[in-house]
Image 1 (spheres, rainbow, N blue to C red):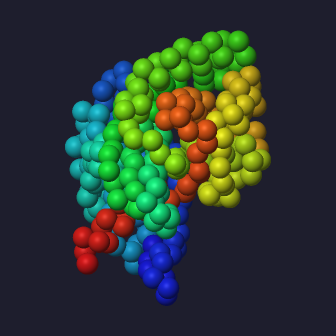
Image 2 (image 1 turned 90 degrees about the vertical axis):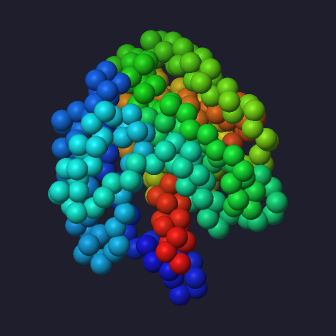
Image 3 (image 1 turned 180 degrees about the horizontal axis):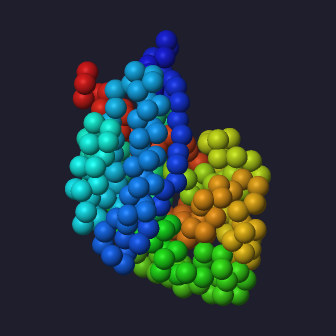
Length: 289
């Protein structure tokens, strides 16, 4: 990322590799060997690509690292492999940076807007006006964790078992998201991260790269979820717009988004590709100037 000629930010390159770092964390309390190796391999690839552009490097971690007993060991291995230090963000910092990223170039009209960041292990909510953060919360609720609790969501038991699991999951999610009812009302919710963007790509029969800025209604979202719950995992993976590595956990994340919108009394969400990473880089840039 660099400053463009007109003062706007220019993204030179971006990418994502799903590694399931939190795999098995719920049971063991530790990062698994396989997940660790996959993640270190992905980090090394991104470091190589970034250094080829002469970039200044930063690295952040979120929910899985906050919970893992062996997070320090992972950080040491990563530093030895890449020379880059790992910063583990607290939940409220994660929410604040997601808000900052998603609000980049948003209107400054005095209206209160919110950001929902649905990850694998946690969900962050933040709201404010004119790009200024007013409140933030981080909840230990994510697409991977919901799928681990309600295994029939993952695609091995499509149809009636999956739908029954979805009803149970909705009740559990609503109980954990009830804090959202205490926040001030908002005119817009911006949904960031892979879960909302992938659901939007399916809804529009498009791709994740082409849905940022489009609206996803709760009605359409719930219809997509119903469709996915009726499909076995192999068929989910080839649904147009689906990122195959998300096929098992996407209904769990979608249920979180649906329940969050219901509790916020908002009928739709704006899909937004500007997210935590951009927010963190903006913060880093402002601290250096």
